[in-house]
Image (cartoon, helix red, strand yellow):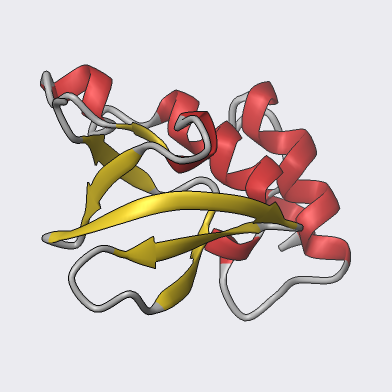
Length: 107
């Protein structure tokens, strides 16, 4: 990747997080919040650009209900890179990535 890590290929906003990520890459870029934030700034398909009313899970207040993957959850506590959320219909708890796009329930 080193030959491609230049400003001719990537914008400066993506280049620095990408360089840091490439030092010790994970199995997925989605697990790196800094890189995902940088990539989303350049992405034309983020909900704001397409008119969708979605926000990042990390921006949802604790205790607020939201929709994710066609299911309703209540936001819980933050744990490193994920947020523990409780599914309303089953009562089961799930750890969802903090930078996942979710839709707030209107209440």
